Amino acid sequence: QVQLVESGGGLVQPGGSLRLSCAASGFTYSMYAMSWYRQAPGKERERVATIGSTGGSVNYADSVKGRFTISRDNAKNMAYLQMNSLKPEDTAVYYCNVYMGVNYWGKGTLVTVSS
Image (cartoon, rainbow, N blue to C red):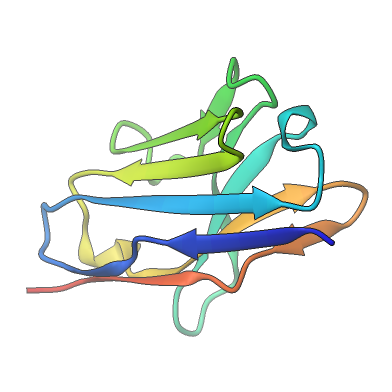
């Protein structure tokens, strides 16, 4: 079965950095695009970044462009989200996602940006 397990969240001060990881299993990882989403308290889940199956194409939400970088390692079935220059409004639960006709989600990892 498809499993996505996020890690790397935590408490960070404004301007700081975090790197999120997503371990994927149960499907042919190298064939699918991977995405990161986030959901802040009281808000809808929003897409943050997507990377193509080979890593050759990436796109980002306007709110994170220039600060976040998505990447993947197909040999390790891993996806990453490097987050720099974090702001309080980046506080959210971050989810790893793969779409294969239906959406699959991890359980999420909490990122809190606060002084």
